[in-house]
Structures are given as C-alpha cells and as structure tokens.
Length: 347
Image (tube, rainbow, N blue to C red; front, side):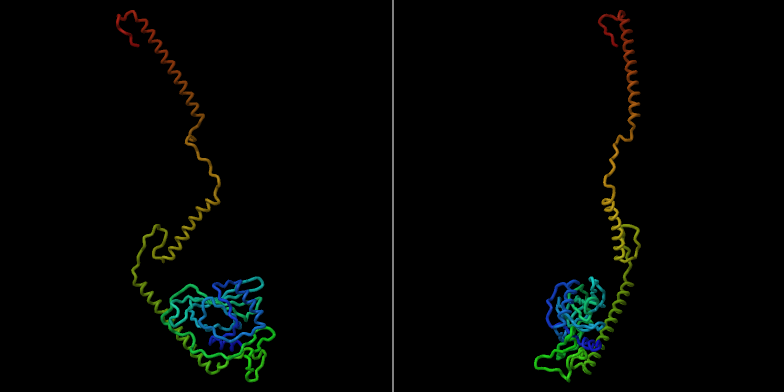
C-alpha cells in the first residue's frame, strides 16, 4: 500500500479532502489540532479525491490522506534545506510537525528562496494517516543560479481519472464514481481496492520516475560541486587577505579571533557587569547607613578638657595683666611730684 501511494506521490498526486480550506496567515498548533480533529470526523462521510498539489499560494492548507513513512515528494516547490521533525505534546494528544525552509518555484518565478512548508499529523489521539500541510513564508536566502530554471516535475502533467475514495470509517476503501460511470474491471468497494494506483502509472510512470530520479541526482551533484567551489574560493580569499589586528579597548581579548566571537564575548562580559549593577540596586541594602559628620574625627570630651584648660590660662593671663597695670599705676603716682608742670604722664 505504501509503495503504491509512494508512486503516486512521485508525480505529486495525493488523496486530499475535496473542499477548500480557508487560507490562514498563520497556523498555530491549536488550530492545526482542531483542523485535524474535524478532518477525522468528516473523513468518515466524505470521500477524498485524487489531485495535484502544484505551486501552492502562501497560506494554503491541504488535508491529505498520507500513510505514515510515505515520502512527501513533489508539490512544485524546490527546497534547499533538510526537513526537520519534532513533536508537540497537547494533553492526551501528540502533534508531529515536519518543517522545511528555503523553498522556491523555479523558472525565475521567485527572486529568493523564502517558501516554508509545515506538515502536521496526530501521532497520538488521532488518525496518523491524515496529514495537514501548510505553506507560508520564512527566512529568505539566495537561489543558486544552477537551480534557477530547473523544473521540479515533468510537464505536461497528465490528467487524473481515478474516482474519489473513502479513507476512514465503515466505507474505508470504497470508491465513489461519477454519475453514469461504473467500476472498471469489475472492481467494487472494499479494502482491497483502497490504494490502487491511478490509471497510466504503468511503464510510463516508471520511465518518468527514473527520469526524475536522474534529474534530481544531477541537480544534487551540481549543487554539491557549486558548494565545493564556493568553499574553495572562500579559503583562497581568506589565505590571500592580509591579517589586520584591530585596536581593542581592553587587553583581555585574544587577537586574530572572529568578529562574531569577539562580539559575543563582549556582550557576555557587559551583561555580567550590568547584572551586578542592577542586582545590587534591586536586592542590595535598601537603607544606606547615615553619612558620618565632618566633626566625627574629634572627641567632645577632649575638646571640653582643652577648652577648660585654655580658659583657665586665659583668666590667669588676664589677672597677671591687671596686676601689672595696677602696679605700674601706683609707681607712676608715687613719682608725680617729680614731673614738671605742662608735661603728661604716659602710662
């Protein structure tokens, strides 16, 4: 069964929910789980149809019947990144997400590789064979000139004549033919007819798949050689470029290291400094101790003792001065009789 679905996916033909899902600018995990849960209920009564996914617009959402471990091959977009897979727990459910970036549509329809694809499926608490595919934009990168005009699939694409099919519920595997068209080759409903390959997928498909495989291999070889040439040119330019020692504002960095490493080291160092400052401001001592007065270096008792001592000395000097003045006055008065008239006595 997986082999047959894999063959269909090689051409970009998938069993998808027939009604269009409204495009979304953003698709979060909760909305993806909600859409998958609703899809499980509707898949029991609505048959899925075979159709291409070709060059989807931004925000497009598709609900597909896609068996586990079946590769998702062609959708008209060439991706340059490797698809990553991770799981998101959601209560009793677990959502698996597969993401790939740096996609573009060849033949110069895109100027940069910025397309992004995410695939969601409920690996716990749901039907893991139902997959939600979402197309949006991500970080851009340049498109290698060798891949700019290389097609992703062979054209023209053939028409699909396979009838719709139930993929879940009691009618699983039953085909739904258009009015007036009955089952071909005597085939009716049943699980044995569930995954019949579309008409025209015989030798013609094998030849197309071989051509696609050869083309993809050639593209990968060209891309690998281009990366090797760019790496070699970068090494040659690095060897020819003169080494320049930048002046640093401190002597704790090592010379001849990359600008990014130096910037990261400075960022961490400055972050540690600022963390110390704000940590002290936030969690340090709330009330600062009172500032000491300028007179705190003096002893009041010592000053009072010295003041009393000076006051006693001053009083003694004043007493001595008064005594000397009184003695001098008495001496002058005793000699007044000897002073002639008209002369003054200077004390």
